[in-house]
Image 1 (cartoon, rainbow, N blue to C red):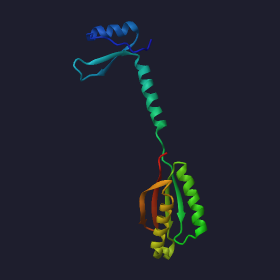
Image 2 (tube, rainbow, N blue to C red):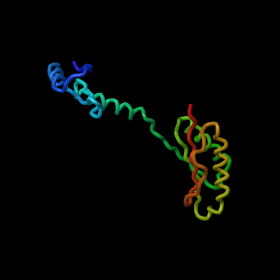
Image 3 (cartoon, rainbow, N blue to C red):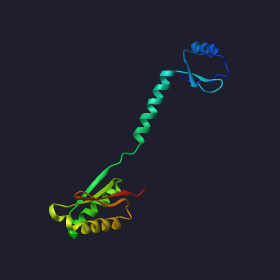
Amino acid sequence: MGENIEIGVYKTRDAQKVAEEQGLDLVEISPKAEPPVCKVIDYKKFLYDQKKKTKEMKSKASKVVIKEIRFGPQTDEHDYEFKKKHAIKFLQEGAKLKAFVFFKGRSIIFKEQGQILLLKLATELEEYGKVEQMPRLEGKRMTMFIAPKKK
């Protein structure tokens, strides 16, 4: 019971009679075809399988994780190396990286230093990920996105 049963070319009444005899439903699959295509199936089981497939597809879809790393325009070498190690770890885990330089107060005059810092980071992370968006100034932040390389 509940199996898909192929019916040859039947008239509608005959197909309905066959479906009723088997305790199943007659479902119109392709109404625009000439003649319309119908199947004798258990409709509730069909709906259940559809829901199950869509749920499975959603679970297989990958969720994008974005990790952030914040720099100052005058970040020293040790702090830079420490944050670079974290960036490498994030990219290896498959997360996108959002690296940004935050300019406080009048430090906005060091825009070039911030851009140099982000470009240096991009070149050193080249083997782990590729730059999605080059450094761009938005208000008091200069932001750059790096996506992980596919394995």
